[in-house]
Length: 468
Image (tube, rainbow, N blue to C red; front, side, top):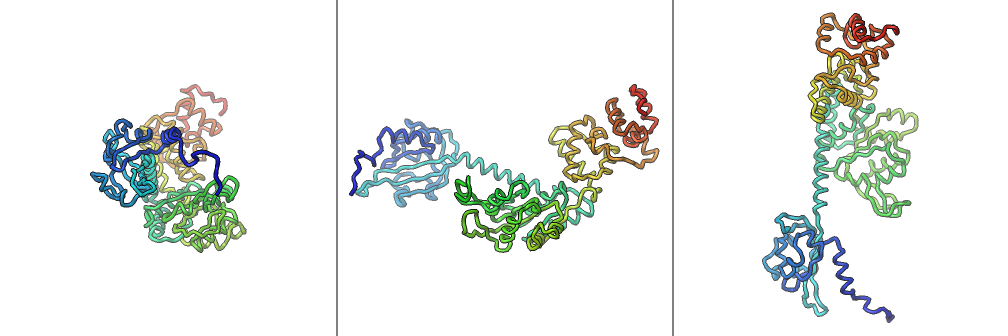
């Protein structure tokens, strides 16, 4: 037998032991065999509100634990289940704070016996779960808000093109098929993915979103599949991926057309086997998820060009949904504009009613390369400038106003329009004249006045005609 020269290596110095208890973030207290508190570290005061002077010598019923081993706190130590089980491991319960509030805690307890098996007392540790409960509530609230955002009625539209989309969402939500959503940027593909999830049988499970174009291949692989410690430089601990994070729910892979050949192969395997492997290990893990993908590219064309696997393409498009561009659903523009106006009124406290007829005409004539997202941004831009009840032409972004505009109004409509819209101020008129290369007829057509009215405004505002 080897003997060490160090003295008392298995015995803590009492002073060191005291400092150790004081430095621990968890609450620690001890009871004698009769159930009276014999020690009380500073964290117990922070958690419970009771000082050592108030607690030592009292029974543990002082803390009013909501349950111990599934039972309410007994009236006496002899009835305590700790004597039967000798251990309480990770029991979530609450204790009664000195001020009367309930504090969520995690409780651990051990029965302490001497070498002869005689009970000497009990050691208990208490972890304050207040922050954890707060984070849980915030996560639940975030999930609820996400569900609100992706409610079916949050997708706005009455056009025939959108009626087809609504029918597809209902059908997709009723199944568990893999879905491919295709459409230009800004058409609302993420809203459709959310609507499918939150109207499906998986609605109460996670809805996990990842943008495949936002990460390089190596990071995307780790993000999707997770990794084990040491799998690569910087992998200092195990990490689950988005496939596991979405367990029981839906994984939405946006910009799926951007993934590399390696990720394409791995994704194909997941779709075929419903299993994943974390980076750095060979263990297969089953995943129960629904996969929804989206792209603004022509995925079939990428297949033709050899940039996307054909077998993966057909696996992804089991149930395709096409999102029409805004220029193909112009019946929805006024509805969408008014929806954004109502939302921004609530957000800013303004009371804007709508867009003026001339401004709405421009919105209807514009081609909307950025689709619904661009329309929303345009309305938000107008909100910054608009100080009247109606958004006017000059409140809209300049790139939208510069689009060639040819309204077909009768004389009666022109007269009515002039009464409804505000007269441009000097600076607004100069800007518009410059945009139209000082063509007064074009300016008149854009804002719904006659050419003679533009000349009159210029004279009143002392704007030179030398550019005409």
